[in-house]
Length: 526
Image (cartoon, rainbow, N blue to C red):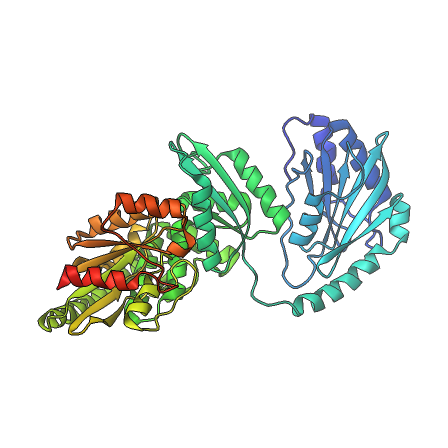
């Protein structure tokens, strides 16, 4: 029970006395208890809510301002919770608010009742109960009327129908997320960053139902984002039936746990989301090993929060992929697994190096296709090599490195490699785990840097890709390939032509500009 400090001691003791009272289980609400609750609500100006079980026990009392009452009702999947919430509207009508309806649905309550007050006494009431995915509302004049209406019997009928309703739903729960971005010192383009985060969420089959952003000089010491924004996120969770919050910022294990406890839902950050996508994309043994190693390295400093979160909120994002069974409670075991997977990847890296030497001995020049995720690299490889690499308009559609023979002209054959796409704020665990794969760019004779110029942030994407190439120590000559010209404006294309006269402008999807690209590659390599 949480009672605001502003409430006088005499009223506080009367409110506390409500907790634990019992009335006849055949009644929806005891009339004397209802009068006491309404009188206290009038005297304090606060909403007062009773949580009542089916035996007539008042198991908890909640007090708060309008739409700010903290209810402690645990959701039960597949049936009603067994609790009803009866609360006052001291300064308004008995009409159920959006928050009331959300609370009813989100917690699978037996029902929710709002009571209006006049002259410190209950005036009228509205009761809402579930009917499939909709809500039925009953208007009642007083406690005697609501008791005679037969709502207790209606609850048991609803519980039976709800069990049948949930049995027909998809058993896999849909993940509905609130996106959060905290800009520190530099505002940048928060909407653009949230757009990209939403793209990542969509790729992971998560439905985005809300966004929250804030500019701060430094992160909040407790929640990273301000406490007022925490309240805003909590409201969005309730209104939109969200069960996941995704931060664009990287969170420490303690911050993740603190925020998750405050919001009552699972909380992940951008890095965990990206690693989860990789887990679903890896197909080869090497790709799976790389993802597993990245997951282990990411989880090691966050083990406490990770295990606590997964235990409370079940599976979903952050719990998928080949590494999920390796995240044991024992830190020593995780560390041993990291050493083991690193050694396995080192052996595969040696094998990859032998393949590179063999290709060089065969005197076939090598080309590496790099670029921001979803820039069209795999589409370009398919076009050049007449291959069938998986292509889809989503972030990180392909994860495993693919190498194909490409015939540019008679007697002019090259090996072309499509690498994993880059992204802003790429987790360092990913760069370390995928080092052997990314070495394909380091040892290439030529790099094709593919850019999606239809994306408003293409210049930022170029900067991110160049940053990763510099970090890897790539020294090969680079051809800038501006893709998706069929979707870009003439103004942008002309500006880039003037700025980069040696660049190539293509549409891999429309097979436009490919012959010119081949000619430039031939001149560069032969």
